[in-house]
Length: 241
Image (tube, rainbow, N blue to C red; front, side):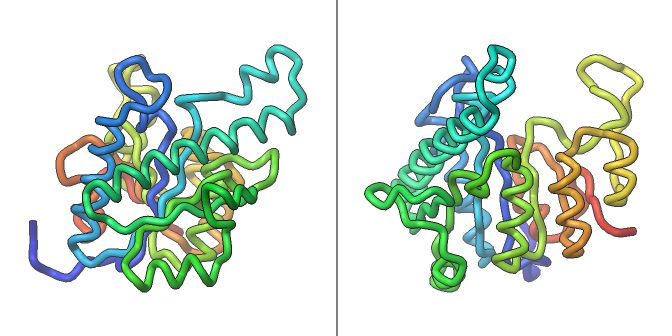
């Protein structure tokens, strides 16, 4: 990797819950958690401060509950708690690799994690610790993408990296449409208006209002995270222009 200083000094890494799962796509795979922790360690080695927000798709999808008549608020609260399990597992994996990490939750669970306190989170980052945010925003009706955008803005991150299993944003689903092409750059408005499924509208709007760039990349592509924080072209970049 290049020895040039990173372009971004503080980043928010938005991970899906499936990133923690093994081949079955369900639950937490300790080996996969270690792989994620190793990627975070590589980014930390560049001197970059890291905030992580995790989804819960490996345990729960609220729409499944809704399809069976579950109350929306209850379904969302279940999802928030599932993200805390992912956060604890990732913290453990980080610590096994010698990375100091803290879990903060938007819903107070003081016996297992710190409550989210912005100034405390900033202090952890300044001390070189990875801060893993659980329980979304603490409110129903908001996705973990929106939680990522919110926490990125609150903690003064310079970029939101949405790490997926696809190498960027495509004009259509590349697994279904052979003519789909990858888009290297997008504006926030185009991402919303073209309904490309990058993130929900609330999350993109929050990034737009705070001029927070979004990078969508393939988490599992070797060195993709490192390349992104160094400012190299990787995945899809979403900005104001």
